[in-house]
Image (cartoon, rainbow, N blue to C red; front, side, top):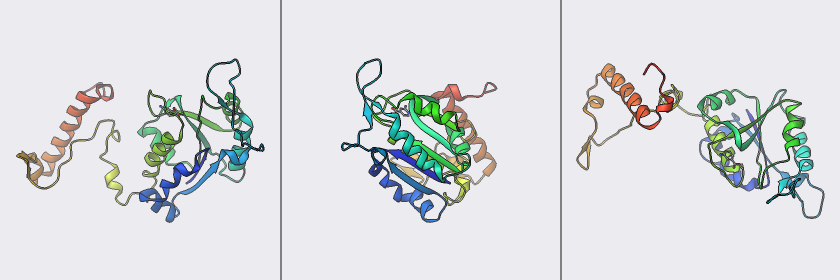
Amino acid sequence: MRIDIVTIFPEFFDVLDISLLGKARANGLIELGVHNLRDFTHDRHHTVDDTPAGGGAGMVMKPEPWGEALDAVLENGADDPIIIFPSPAGVPFDQKMARELAHEQQIVFGCGRYEGIDQRVFDHYADRGRVRLVSLGDYVLNGGEVAVMAMIEAVGRLIPGVVGNPESLVEESHEDGLLEYPSYTKPAVWREREVPPVLRSGDHGAIARWRHEQQIERTRRVRPDLLPPEL
Ligand SMILES: COC(=O)c1ccnc(N)c1
């Protein structure tokens, strides 16, 4: 998979050189391009924003630099890339979307700042391909970079070969629609708190049943909205 990021803070993504994603890049599983939006301006101050049409507070990101940047990124890219703009006005990002995005050939992330990006950028590229505004939740950030980092991690770890043991991806929260069961390890007793005996019983059937019951109980308590109607 190729991932391109357009941002005014390219150094923000230096952290993608380490950990799991750093290894995935070294193994060629993920190809990453980080592009500074200001490189696509032509004035002395590398201006990327201007006052909002119709007035109001704050500044809006100009369409011209975005057009030049996205054209450059798309020029030699995949046949059918998906362009994602993180936005509080977007569709909710979830594990299902992460799984779908893990199969893309190329994802282009556009990190907005200020009061957002001129709407004509979204419209222009939506006329030519797939554009999605995606939200991490009902809150506002100063820019899209943090959201892009979260989405790259959520998607990147699902790309075959990135995570050493694919089994570890199966029993995670939201993978089967329920929250994951509580985890324990050694020691058997810690500060007078014992690991549930069933987990040390060696009875794999009983352990699987206990874990599923825990998933249902935790989901009912924490996220009743995720419970399937039959439960
Ligand atoms: C500037 O981007 C945001 O404020 C943002 C992006 C994605 N999800 C959100 N909830 C906010």
